Length: 257
Image 1 (cartoon, one colour):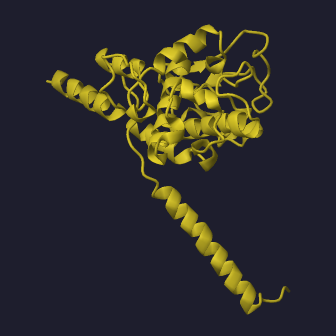
Image 2 (cartoon, one colour):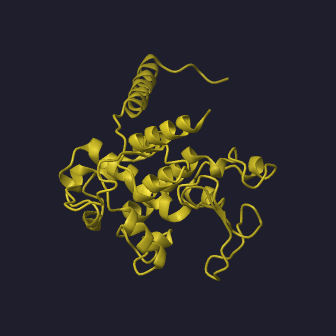
Image 3 (cartoon, helix red, strand yellow):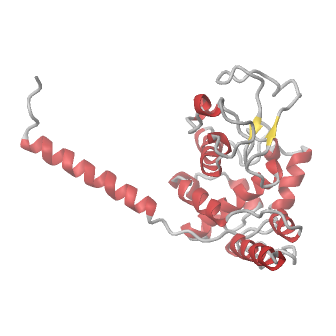
């Protein structure tokens, strides 16, 4: 039988709990703002498709760790956001929300249930978690092996009994997929000290010289105004993910009898 903690021990434990609770409360209260809309988001809405959900902006913004708001972010971020280091923390979070929207646009056309099996030798391997050929899934085209490699909150044991494109699969849930993507990018640019654009990036869309990178670059043309980008596509420069969603919902309501 263990002895009860001393009064001083209880005091320290209580103080620790207060600190943890405070950090959790600060994270929950973190201010966010709708990110600008990417060109593909605007186009999807115009064509009657389902646009990017502004709630996904909040997921990304709240998932961004302090290091990705600091001077530790590699200098090539200025290619897309020239004033990144001078902006407020809220605007830096909005930039990252826009960044991941653009990444999802290039990777999966903003479709959460997108699943792809690649045939290229370098990626056509067996996923050690599923025991099957690797498939890229969800908004950021991730795989179940990322659960082991990056600690992502995917559950193959739960998902394997569900239909392939079931949105309830953990890997296809936008929140879990985007949070995992933030972890992967943090590993690249903070832990490994690699540039934002790297030939060894997890995503081919962030590998300079690839065709998919060209697609990504086109989606990065409407970052937050605070970034200081002087020229933006006129069709999207005043749009946010929220305004695009509102227009899409209005259009859908007008079609109903």
